[in-house]
Figure 1 (tube, rainbow, N blue to C red):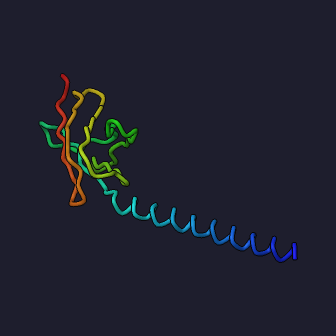
Figure 2 (figure 1 turned 180 degrees about the vertical axis):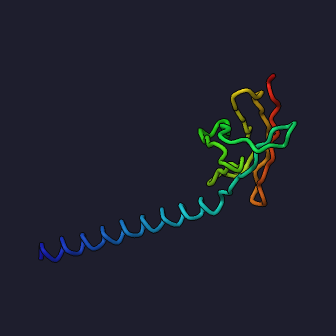
Length: 116
């Protein structure tokens, strides 16, 4: 009788744990669906030259990336809302731009001014 009771309780506990994992999995998928991608290009304001290695930060999120060889940057998993995008590059003035991220297309072009 004790073995039967222990077996039954183990079964109930296992079902509860599996149900909780499924619930967490569904909420995780829903959170991923709500996030969007943000991308853009950084250029020299005078020449239009693509700038490589520019530090691009989404202020307040801890997210930071750098432009690639095509002057492009990319953030994934960004929640919709308003953000301050900050760029930092040697020999150029820092640029700060407030933008609204929504589930649609989120691309931004940034033109940096030479500090000389």
